[in-house]
Image (cartoon, rainbow, N blue to C red):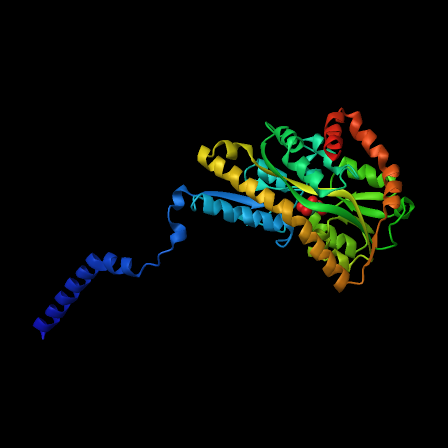
Length: 347
Ligand code: LMR
């Protein structure tokens, strides 16, 4: 009996010893292999934050840029896109970029004007009549000059993306003549030019972050706002507003920027790939944004009670005249050359 007990203990000890010797072999066979983890140590992660919905021109372009970059770099660069202000609101994203919490953003031009007031150019009312001029301004000399002005301001300017022409919406009454704006409160982006535009219309502009606009329209903190169809549609503001005027009075575009130190620290070949991926995406968004806005307008017309009014050319002329002092304000600050460049490409 004693002999049997000792033999059992001996066999168990030997068994345990052999198990520990061989366990690595068994475990290796069962490990789940995830090829996403391959080369993780060298992978460059770019966190790209923006405030709009995924199904908008900017939302889709950001996603597309991430995919092109992943392909071009064979997985060496991973661009993580955070839409809908999930990480940072539009009033926070610039600080987050400068402190490298995120590496890329694409704020609207208005939101660039704090660090580069020259970008106010694109907030001027009725600056563009045709998309082909917008395209030329964004991809040509004017865009290059404006991007260069960002050097040494903590951000690397990569490109200009377009969304589309802005339209006016309101709850109280249709907006046809300048007088219709009087005493109403309008949500605006932070921009001296847009503020002046609504002040000239005897309205009260109120700066509100993009993600709070729905609530401010719902609670009547403001009566109306101006934006592109894709933002009005994707944020369902059209369900809260009774009237929309297709005025094409302004253009909403974006400056795609990266944290400057982060950019400078990237290897040359990655910088080249980023520039190429950005050029492809810019081309895509310039072509697609208009179609997206057009499709969404059809959906609003079909699915909502909103009254939509198309401003005539004569009515536009009246708005233009009323808003002319905005130009005088902008030109006072020696920005004449930029406006002249736009005028030149329109001819
Ligand atoms: C807005 O604040 O209305 C826009 O800048 C939002 C956007 O990024 O399109």
